[in-house]
Length: 85
Image (cartoon, rainbow, N blue to C red; front, side, top):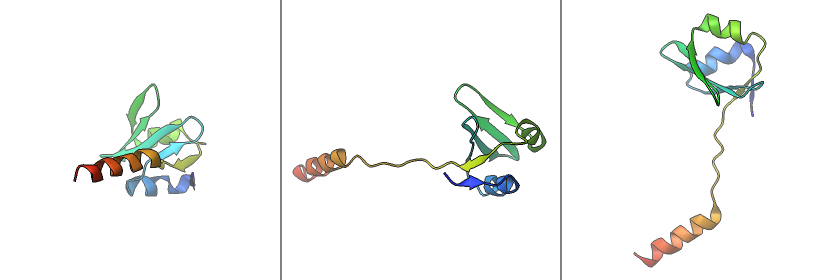
């Protein structure tokens, strides 16, 4: 996971990226000039100022969805598809 410096957080959010607060796994994104926070058991929308009051010492990472391909299922699909074309 790429580590994001605190002074770059807003730059990444304004560019449409989703960040992760590394201490607790909270996802952070920007929508309509508000910061959206989402964790396993809760979610919240806060102002920029409130965000920094809540997470003054947080460490951030760039959220990257892991895309994996199941090669066995992929092979089965193409065999099935070729059979019926």
